[in-house]
Length: 312
Image (cartoon, rainbow, N blue to C red; front, side, top):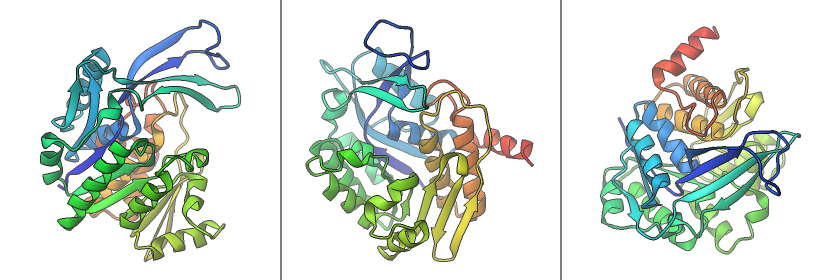
């Protein structure tokens, strides 16, 4: 099977346990949980049996060990995760609002994540890659952007493919180099995985179908719009395929979109029919929210198929 490689942040999440809790006063927390959007994505790919690896950096601390052990257990190639003495592994403190929203306190740019580079181990991992996946959230520094661009160029030069999940908020598009980096990735993407209105960050059209047509006209082969509880739609040259979501009891929404994306890309690379890829992706996204912790709900292929069987 084709090997997926990604690059970007690895961190731990520490979560408030009560809805409406703030960080202005002491309160109960739970964690640490291994996390980071590209790490969640690649963990899910590994759990599905897809050859997978990640280029990243962690500190020489317990949080770094926690993440590396988790990824290894899921079958991910961790050879290009650099361990830096004197730098702390990235972190995110998360609290939950009564309206369903979330607020974060991040330490990423100034953590070990900010030291990512294209070293010998990263080059070796890229040499084995058939597909490169990009998370927009990872484009937080020039160092990471340089690694991502090099990864895309290396894989594309060998006839490989690229997937792109914007995973970004409109308000940080004005960050230096961000818009340029996002456009660089999109121009080379084969699979585009926006969530909801992220589709319109890159188009003039304001209707979903017309915006998807714009994206496909730029050379993207499959534009997959994630809609949460409303399911997902894949637009490609043959038309549009809609797949409904599965109703589950939500425990923690973090990472659901990353798990969906990893599943869709994995089965797209295997040449599965779009409908099957979408159903398995929706199954992985649904299972992801049923456990506390961003990677706690990543599913194996057997678990995803058993879930689908239970819903027929």
